[in-house]
Amino acid sequence: MDEALPADALLVELRTRLGDAVSVDPAVLEQARADRSGHRSGAAPLALVEARSIDDVQETMRFASRHRIPVVPRGAGTGLAGGAIGSGGELVLSLARMDRILEVSVEDELAVVEPGVVNGDLDRALEATGLWFAPDPASRAISTIGGNIATNAGGLLCVKYGVTREAVLGLRAVLADGSLLETGRRTVKGVTGLDLTALLVGSEGTLAVIVEATVRLRRRPAGGVSTLVAGFADAPAAADAASRIMAAGARPAVMELLDAPAVRAIAELFAARGEAGLLPSLGLGGEDAVLLVQADGRDAAAEIEAIRAVLEAGGASTRRTDDPAEGERLFTVRRAFHPAMERRGTVLIEDVSVPRSRLGEMLARVEEIGRRHGIAIPTVAHAGDGNLHPNLVVPHGMSSGSEEVPSAIWAAADELFRACLELGGTLTGEHGVGILKRRWLEEELGASQLALQRRVKAAFDPLGILNPGKAI
Image (cartoon, rainbow, N blue to C red):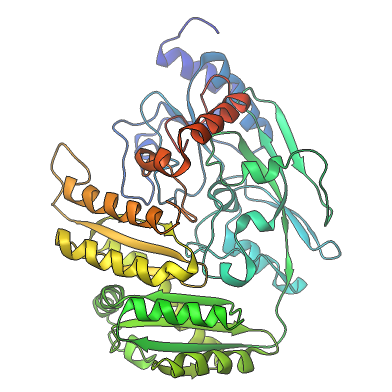
């Protein structure tokens, strides 16, 4: 390692290597201090590199390795766990400008993309081919494929089509020393060596910088969609109904649960937008909790009727629509949950998962924790796979100068996480650990496994410069 250089000299060298890809614009650096988790770092990063090619990423990592400068890979900045936040003395490496779709193979049902391609843009580009990219996070209109891969993003369609890991065939990634690693394959099968592709998916930028991905595509479902809205007395009852649907052998494309506080918050958002009549027009707003279920394909109508029978046998009120536009409006309501929370204050967006059979118990625990701490915890859930998103809101003006999140909120979050683990669950289903959940990591993994994971990181990143302080 060279002798430590002052910041000005480092920036001169970095600009010599990368030219105008390097930004020290205060507005750009200020934006890189935060993501959508509500967290903000204590100081702005040294600089932001806006990579436009693999060469730019390699040059950045060679420079960082030479000077032992921490590097924070970043996509669209839509993360919910503080995993892509830059701080003082760090370089933020933005992949957002690497946004080309390099190849689409209809025969092999795959695409090769750069990490900055927006999830929803890829799906639109594939429309004429009859193919689609199944991972469907709620942020699909703004989140990037690279960010989806870094966090193993899930979303509304996971119950039938799986999470991001199941859609990634291979990766090109730049290691901490600037060398290029290629993992995976283009074939349907392949078991040669260790599965480093699966290891990199969900590693939150701590092992390597993803610069290209070969992703699996699917044929678009033939036929239409059929959507069902079901109302329940409370969220645990809705969760139990979701478990009965899965136990009956149904596999809907989407099954989303909204508890009563979530529905009320969304209603307030739409009222503020001048759209107060939207929820009632869709059959929403009167129930204490809501289950949204959608089936797709040629048998969608028959499948939704079978699901409807299960729900009504349990006492639920239901409403069905076969109009795709109305079905999309229903799920627009679901996707409005996070904006509805953000207008109330700084949001701690949690992301716990439990076995499907324990979802009702977990929702009851969330309600009880909220009552005990005097905190409203509106919750939505991907009910088909047991993934809950309880939201703890720090109202505007509530934070003190010494703490971003008040201790009462952390106390409620601590109980929530412990309840999840007691029910056989996990701290994060799709958002990642970032900085938000580091304090609970050992409790789930155990000391031995956590130490092993850190040794794996050291093998990829001996100097510890890739996204330090995040995840493991």
